[in-house]
Length: 314
Length: 291
Image (cartoon, rainbow over all chains, first blue to last red; front, side):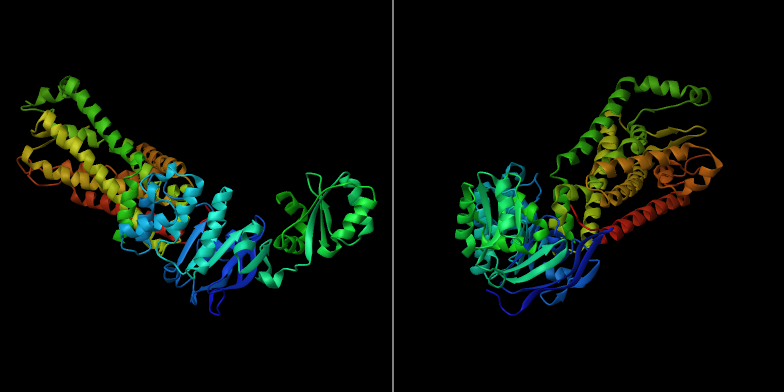
């Protein structure tokens, strides 16, 4: 639940790589207790922004304040209170899980307490493999260890960049549960980026949607989502013919075909029965008619230029 | 700072590649010792033919001190590669593994991190030189025994009396450590710009080889730049074995013929080390971590 104190305040943040503008004039704030979701397609600027939040990249312009301190002048003080996993959790593969924990605990300024570190490993289900070299860990185990390493010093702010990359469904569910637990049970502020809309939808209290390096929209899920609107995935006996028919019948509606041959149409939920009747009366058989989830619908509606791309991905 | 240094040393000595260097030194020194144990007397008799016509050579010429001198001369050939193997991996290896970004999300300043990594590289370098000293000097003395040391150069023959040799080796290995720390600093600087360790290792070795070749070319243009190349000073340790003679042409025990030259070489190496390390910190502080 959001409180009033801003943990992160970003203002006029830009980053240019040569001629490529990765992030442009970004403004947003993250409140204490938020699970703040960064949404956007690959290349939208999410990772660049997160790397700037962690001072891994220098902004071309703009300012970042975290815990009320300027990141440029108080980097060390800020990082004492931050834990992060950037994309895949890359660790020292020739060392054991415990040794990795010990190294990063010491770098975080902690006095090493073996029982504490083992307890932290136990929390992510790795206590029985703590002495194994990380090179023998699965991707999911590495990601869990990465999260344990990020949280070894009990930070107030946790930044997770694409934490579900490369994970199986069970691993994704574990990360989701962990984020919710960090926020609800431990009162942590979490910033999480992902291109998986459904994952963000299930955990985020507030969202920032980015596209081509710019902020498209920022707000809570309730503020963004129109429960009446959806994108319908439609598969008929003649998709090309059906699409031509619907385009003439519903001019102004956003429609597209997917590589698999099916169609997407942005439509109000109340119109779905009429649409089905129209298709059948025109002589097309309906094989499937699946409404997409609410956030996805919203995301597609505000990044229309990328509708085809999104249809390929989802 | 000690925390970072100890962590870096822990990582260095948990990597198998670290032990390649120690194994290589052991094998190279062992092979040279074996060769001289089998054929050394013949080899030395051939080399001392001209000398024996003018002087009567008494005692054991092929002894542990001479062996250590011969082995230390190979320093420029293989040790820089063994140093670059670790120092060139210090930053680039982390970038390659993806651990650099994790390290930099911890509350450690970039300057401190670089200083810790560099000091750990220097400690590794010094330990490798100590290892080399143990084998080249200690084991050679065990195998070949101790006696006065006769060094044959192109124009002069230097004799250093037995009880005046050991401190010269301590100084020589100290100087050699400084020379190798300079190589480590160069490899360390190069590793800041790379995403894997192959590039810095090869580039560092290429620079050492090119500069060494320049040293051997006796051309006026190169002669003007030679004094400023760090490779020109890497064999400065030999100066510790140039002894001063009194009026009766006897060795002055504890003397060095040209201490100023040794000091100048050491200063140039130290200056190069500082410049390489300073540049490494400067560029790393501005580095965008994209890996």
